[in-house]
Each structure stands twice: as C-alpha cells, then as structure tokens.
Length: 380
Image (cartoon, rainbow, N blue to C red):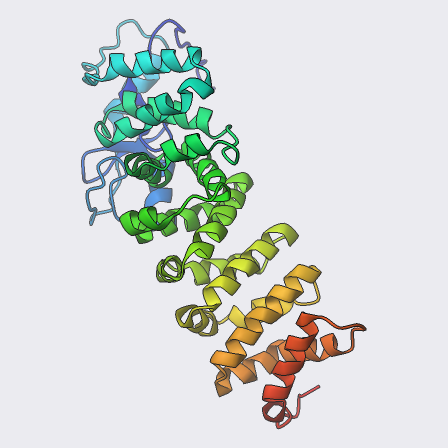
C-alpha cells in the first residue's frame, strides 16, 4: 500500500525536484550524459518520439542516449513529499540575480492595464530567458507571461503585435516552442496563431530559426493528446506558408509533406481541409510535388478525401492532383492514380450536374492523360 503524501504546504519545493521539460515534480528521475536530470517519460519522448539529439535544458549535442536512474534524488523527493524533518536537502540552486526584477515585473503586470503597457511588461519577462535560460525563475516567469498573453486577441491590437514582433521577443518565444513544457508550448503556438491572423511577417523568424521552427510546429501538429495545440499549429502553418515560397521550401526540407500525408489518412473534416490546403501550398513548389509522389501513401491519401469529406476537401484534392499531373506526369504517377481510384473519382466528378472550376479541372486532367489510362484494362 502506497504511503500517503504529507507535503507541508508552507515548505517551498526545491526547484531541482522539477523536470526541466514539464516543470512537474519528478517521479522517476533519470540523468543523461550532460549531467541534467529529467522525468524518465519526458526525456524518452524527447529522444525517441521527437527524435531530438540535444539536451533540452542546455541544448548540448547528445550521442549517448543512456538514461541513468537518479536514486539519490528520488529518495530526496520522497522524503520531501512525506514531510520528513530529518531529510537533508542539498543546497538550493543559486537563484538568478534577476529574481527580484522578475517578481517586480509580474507585480506590475497585475496592476497595469494592457492598454498602458501590460504587453510591454510581459514581453520584457519573456525576453529574460535569452539571458537566463538555465534559471528556473526566469523560465517559470516566462511561462506565466505566455499564459497571460495567449488569452489576448491580437487582431485589433497593432501596438501589441508590434511589441511581440521584436526579434528578441520572437526568438524567445520560438525557443519556448521548442523547449518549453506542454502548457507553455500550447500558449506559445496560440500566440503565434493569433499573430499570424493579425498579419505578422514571418520572414525574420523563419530565417533565424530555420528548420527548427517547422520541426517544432510539426511536432505540435502530430500531438494526438492536445488537439487544441495541433489545431493552432495548423492555422499558424497555413499563414506562414502563404507568406512566401522560401517558407514552403523550409517546411518541405523539415519533412512537412511526410507528416501531413500520414496524419491526413485518419483526419476529421476540419483538420482534413486545412491539411489539404497546406499540401496544396507545398505542391506549388517542385520540391513539394516530388515529396508527395515519393511517399507511398501520397496519391492514395489525397484520392480518398475526394468526394468523401466535403466540397472544399474535394476542390483542394483536385487542385493537388492537377498540380501533380500537370508538372510531374510520370508513368509511375499515372499508374498509381489509376490503381488508387483517383481516375474513377475524376470521372465521377464529370457526372455531377452544373459547372464548377473543380469539374473543369477534372475534365482537363482526363483530356490530358485519358489516352494513357485507356491502355490499362482496369480503366473504368
């Protein structure tokens, strides 16, 4: 029978009892080769699910992925939870010299209306992690600031967007998107989504963060637990990719097409439509078209959504097929379209009453490649 936890509410929990990833008290602390200790399930997800090769706290490269149980720290945590007065805790971490400043800023935040500088105060707290990334006080203050900011509607607050758009602030938020706790990442991607809808120009961030930004967005997109985070990641991706071809090329290089195709197969209507829109944007680049035809499920996944999900999904699916067949009509691609049922759906569109741009595109595709498909005995 497990012992009842007897934590004294007046006793402050030592910061090093928290996992640097989730910021929660560790139950199974393990130490990695850089000497930093994490909750076992969190660091395993970082290394083996997200395929990261760095230490989340220090960003040092990691080659040895051995996880060593930290039995001493586990005993200390259990002693602390049971309120053992005889337990001897190591000296606490040195608190940052910026601690008092951060406390003062948060106090100011509570008493300051947003219209008179609240967002500026929060942005100053967020930027602090660029100076004190290893400081848990700065880290927690940043998370608190993000939790307030993500609730703000930025579409009608140009001055707020301008403050958050400063390079140092965007850099700090991009770091939190990569290394923050699950909650902090949700708050950050919500802010990014709101900024995207307010017309923020993503050029600088993409140039500064490169593929790391897109890998973080794709990780959130793949999160099956936090549906809100994955939905916000979709919205942010759409706006970022709409902004420029350079952004699309970076996303393709980060593996966006592979992730999207695999998620598309089982996606619900709302997400399906947005994923198809992103795939269409990527297919406007030669590299994107090559990525989709090279994926074993690429054409099959698109074909299954045509005439099955919604009118918008069908429209986007046909646009993708048009881009592929118009610019990349190899024998392998045309045969795969026939075998996957894409051709049958194109012909089905021709029998729908009325005129539409989708039907016109289907007709053009049939006229362009019909002679090739008629050579096959399975041509419908």
